[in-house]
Amino acid sequence: MTEQAVIHPDSGLSITEARELTKSENLTEQLVDLIVKGHFAAGSKISEPELARRFGVSRGPLREAMMRVEALGLIERVPHVGARVIALSRARLVEIYAVREALEGMAVRLACRHITEEELDALQQLLNTHQAHIEEVEGASYFHQQGDFDFHYRLIQASRNHTLIGLLCDELYHLLRMYRHQSQRAYSRPQQALTEHFHLLAALRERDEELAELLMRRHIMRSRLLIEQQLTEDKEKAS
Image (cartoon, rainbow, N blue to C red):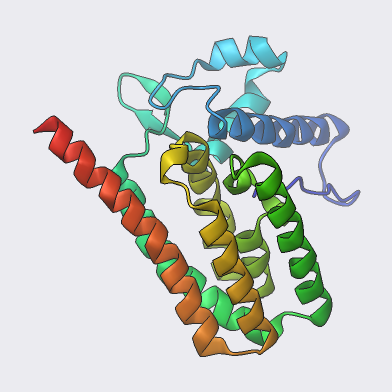
């Protein structure tokens, strides 16, 4: 996730520069949220002058925010076109989930070593909240949880491995959030996914690294297979 930096008094930035940086960080958060939730359609062109007018900011903070959003993989620069929202293909998603399968397996193995009892209890409370939410809305928005409300996000943070956290919570995280918002509910499996989360939590409590990694890899593999099924169906419709 994007985080707002704390500007230290001894950073060397002038008050104006500090304000511009804060504007850029706030803009980044807003742009990420708008793109992830589909307010800007996938593949659509983004006009920087229009955004500057919309948010009432100068081009400087906006350019900085656009660079950050581009670094997160949510927009791309196209020659002779400019900036546009990324369009996630099924094939690209299969690749992303294959990477997740390996990296999150490693992350949960490390989490078994480092997670605290307080963090485990907090995860238990989180899953209990998710269970109540699924029953209330029939699973409609379980996968739209984010940040500290996202079970996977917390597990990755518990790995204490900054490289993994950077890869999974910054570079891939918002792309996955974007997919979750776009995906059809027909392909979701909220109750099964939640049950698998409870099994993962049990393995974490036992500090069973091998079992936790196996469960995580299987958990993500099932999601990858669903996407591959959609990809096959798309190809059949096109043929």
